[in-house]
Amino acid sequence: MLEIAERSGVNVVFEDFAAHSEKVSGFCDFENARLYVNADDMPERQSFTIAHELGHWLLHRNFYLDHPDEYPVLPRFTDPNRGDPKEKEANKFAACLLVPERLLQPVKGAPVSSLASVFGVSRTMMEWRIKNIS
Image 1 (cartoon, helix red, strand yellow):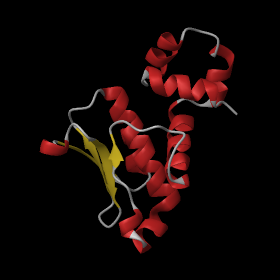
Image 2 (cartoon, helix red, strand yellow; image 1 turned 135 degrees about the vertical axis):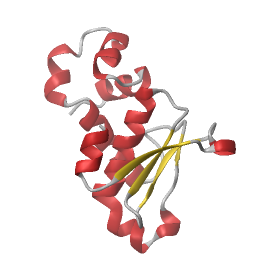
Image 3 (cartoon, helix red, strand yellow; image 1 turned 120 degrees about the vertical axis):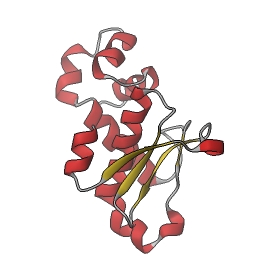
Image 4 (cartoon, one colour; image 1 turned 45 degrees about the vertical axis):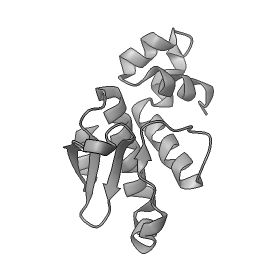
């Protein structure tokens, strides 16, 4: 995930968010082409954060550069089916990037925990991906 982000023109920085560590998974600094990721999160969460913020970088960068006050920092716990359409789009981008349909479709009947482990994502993300496969 790190290499994909960097090849897309953005640097990934693993950061200690100090007092905000319990609440924030990451955010994108559009001005300086950086994705900040919570260094305390589990690797599966970090991968999702990178993919989600990369989605914002690729899909919404111009909008957020023009409207910086509308960019929400990614909280650690979010409901992927609620909220801003750009957040939903970034979540879908992340899910499709981390768990491509062509790889999931043939094995989607396997136990969720096994699939999550194989794809290197959280159980929650895998459950969402299986329910929302195109």
